Length: 316
Length: 278
Image (tube, rainbow over the protein chains, first blue to last red):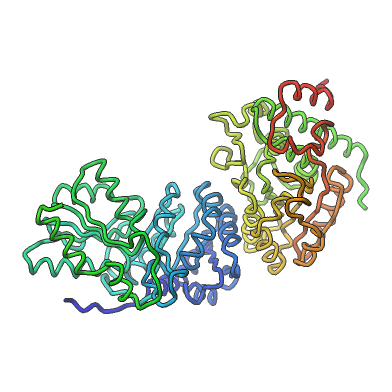
């Protein structure tokens, strides 16, 4: 199997990019809730102290204040761990930001179970599900430092509410400085026509590993980075459902409300095909190394390969 | 004390009476709504919009306008009536309150009425939204002020105190809160459900400049707002003691009218009390 070079954690790429953007965009203000050393917003804070506000451990106040700042023409980037910012301030996002479709960028780190040792209270396995409930929010999960850098630079250009999930551990490098992405798009990394594998964020490299393993078995898989969760790239999904025998989705998220459930709903309406979902099945995780947790919850390359083969074998 | 001309006070009193009649007509016509807490904040709103705040109905998006947030969003009939009186919205819209297709939603909704500074109605959030607006004013070195009316029951929300702590720490002297202290919340008397006393001491200990006034006295409200403008380095709050349902005898301190509209007969009786239009 391919050895992946580990790059920066996506949260670090976020913090560094944000600090670069500060000069170019005087409207950017950055809000954090006592986790700036973890979310890496502290870098912006050191460079632009007059535009950085540490709200202390008070997420609700932070999120509503972000709404007030956006209503006043600022571009607030609001950061904390996904669990705390979204779950604690869910209704503040709903009323203050989503209800008025304000230009607030929520960038939360510690998405998924790859948080690892800190345990379940810090691991967000439901952030995607929660954020997809907000009308017209754009949701992006970049897979590596280069994708993150592009995402942060690009999102500022779009005056709309955005949620970006970043991760805690170092992320396998999949892209480079020159990779072209499209806002609200997805990226097809392998063009096979037998079966489709979809993933995003810190499980994307597993999809690519599975692709190589399948290739050795004579199966050509299509691998798509669904870095944009919402709006759902319906065209790409329809093509995959028409051109390949089925779709495997692997994600570091609860099965309920994750990308897999969105894809299944969409395709069952438009063009039913075989869909296999891999994610966390109605549970919370625990302390451990990310790989140990991935193994326990079935987020493995072997599992992707097996599901792809099930689809190919015409079984159910 | 500021000397305020008697004619000015009489003018404000006359506006307040009109606003009260509008609130009764609107909620009566809608068949639902919150007349009690709308009537209690009438003088606060009238003082702000007709005497204190810097704003221009001909230019609602004026960047240097003072901002107004009704954090206790259920009192919005009073705000709609005031906005109509100022000329921000058509007076004829008032009787469409809460009806399908109306911009006058049951709680303030900026999607339908952009002249509102924010959508409010989930209690506890308005002060924090005001924090963001006050911060933006500071960053931009502007001198406009942010006024936020909060409820007394609303002060049970933890977020209010998150914002309270933040405002004083960040010396947001461009923010002034007003608590409409009508002593009741939906389920009953505040002192019986979860007393917020000693509320003046709470705000003082959070580092705010606190004023305590009769929230139906224009003289006292104007004086407090003028004094609040002079405060440097601290946020201010005016604890306005009010009467729920103020102005209509059978609604005053009658918490039945927290969230119940007057019937047709009650509406007529209330309007008689308030004095028919000339």
